[in-house]
Image (cartoon, helix red, strand yellow):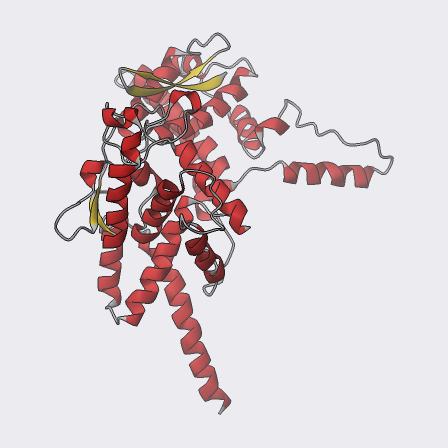
Length: 412
């Protein structure tokens, strides 16, 4: 079994198929389609991979989840426990008996220690475990509603709800214990010396520019991410009509567009958060307009669509077509190699927030107003708790400053 992505009439679909490319189960296909309606394609792919793990586990034990739920022969506690234990390990390390190959060693304690260490090394992250458990629960709930929504006995419902309650307890435990790491508030996500060096080498005229081609396009992409704090998907789906090449000449429209039929890409980028206007430097907007008029226009296929950034190489016949997310990621791979520091698009979003905090403090902006401005700039709703991530860092810095002032008085 594997996850397959495909398009039909310009609409992306995700399915789990067998070796002959046929869907493994109609209920699985219907479930993934129900997700696709309300979630982005990338989210659907992630959920499909979680479900693939679930299906592989139970298929290896000749258990068909749809058949078991339909017959009310729900997963037993021991069957669930076995599944839960396997959720902790990487796919490549899993088999029926959790066997890890180690050299023959006479010392039993040493051999047991080596096996235990191998298991620890094969563990996946807490988020991955939680995702697998959650997908199992949600798929079971979806199946139950399909088969028994308006036709079930109290005994059947009670039995199913007890199973779901047990799964939820395990699922929620990982949400409460996701990370025990305490970050240093004085550390930047991108050290200032690395950031300054990056600003220098991305210039198309820099002798240290790491890109062999597409220097202007790559400079604009990186600069837009740095100046606006928008997401990778928002840059990849940016259209010429979204750029305000008029008036103040410093704004771009950021919004969700769903499954845009004009987008030929299989992996269609999208905006994750709500619509807003992002502000960039006027000079950058003028450079963007120059790129559109004089560089992008050289590629004839670019005339068939409105997307700003296009492929400038004819890999798989894509020249002039909208730049793929993989190609955008490749830009940051080359940049990271040149800097000797791992840079990715979302890291620039975090750096934007650090600079935003520094400027807010320097200008004496009221903290509550600063957070409202941040929420708008990031596309977060007023009820979003995402801003707390950055608030905690600033609070930690202020706490340290006040603690030091208090200590100086105490020492006197």
